[in-house]
Amino acid sequence: MKDLILPIAIVLGTAVLISISYSSIEVKGRPSVTACNGECYDDFVVADKERQALLSAQQATATPAELGSKTYTTVCLACHGDKGQGVVGPALAGRDTGYLLTALAAYKNGETRGNQSALMWAQSAALSQSDMDNVAAYIVTF
Ligand code: HEC
Image (cartoon, rainbow, N blue to C red):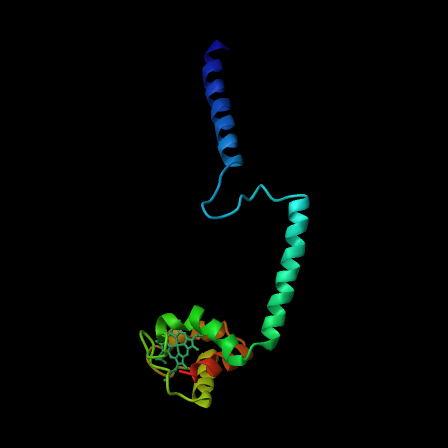
């Protein structure tokens, strides 16, 4: 029994240390995940509802090109360039809406257009028809 005291003490001590450090884990630049409950959480829910309402009000008044610019900068920009000048993917600047939408629809249908079409299949699969309309509306502004 005596032989067990030290191992048990070590295990318990480690468990206590781990639970203390986990309960106070903080990620730099982020609010504590354990700090907001009760009243704080209720306030958050209210604030979040207001934020959502504001966001949908903004979306309702945003033009297709404004909506498309979001998709473009987050998804397409890396491969097609900030001004549609082309990087990994071909240049899109100067293409008209019909050309862009036909190409996107073809990729969404899994069609092969060029020898790197596979790169666009995954991209277009994630886009709805209105996403494509919006992003094309943005690309023609280049
Ligand atoms: C991983 C890189 C990558 C991303 C991200 C990407 N593309 Fe592409 N895109 C390509 C490549 C490569 C091609 C050429 C494909 C081929 O050979 O058919 C292409 C082709 C196209 C074409 C046809 C161009 C032409 O002249 O035939 C359009 C339109 C297009 N992309 C739009 C988009 C839009 C819109 C997005 C964002 C939703 C996007 N792409 C995201 C790489 C990418």
